[in-house]
Length: 133
Image 1 (cartoon, rainbow, N blue to C red):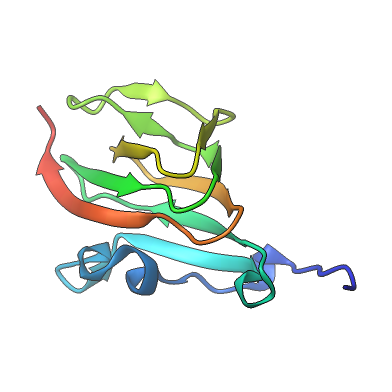
Image 2: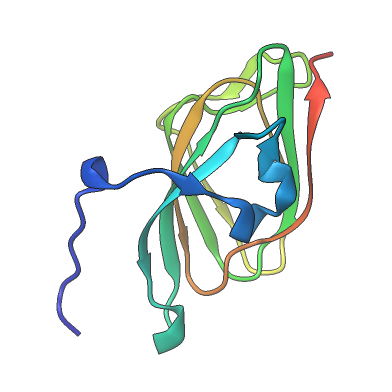
């Protein structure tokens, strides 16, 4: 297979509804958006994307998911938060959710991350907007 190259700065952000479900849109506004960098799932590979979370002021995006394949997450901007909206992990942080691992995240500020799945992306069990504690 030949090398694939994309210029993410030339790509438009797209709705994340196909992967995160209808809760990725709140009040007609995309609060989760993607730039799919590669998708090799039809060839037995994985999928890589940039994801951008933009919670409304005073709200957290709370996600509960199960990893359907190894999930590698590298925070480029922003990061996870506590229930009160305080940073829990900032930009530059890395996490690995191995296949089968239930996990969650709370996002309180605009966050951009590079997410690479070894195969299928997470099964999102729930995603909701909650008030900061």
